[in-house]
Length: 78
Image (cartoon, rainbow, N blue to C red; front, side, top):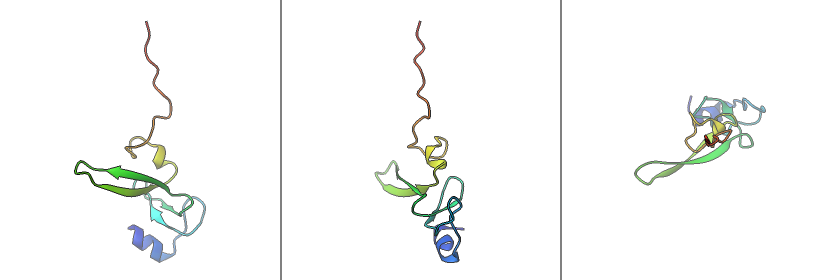
């Protein structure tokens, strides 16, 4: 189901029950405007487009290329 079908079908947000705004590309959950997390994703040709993730996927480095590590890796000292 794509974003337009989600918005037209009257589905509710999988997180809070609000009105669906988009589907998370990472997990497919329906999210409302309040729960959606905006990221700008770029490509090699200089294009940038908006992507709306759920609050979990926005932090997942395997899904969101802009996600920061949850814990910084420590330098290995002598």
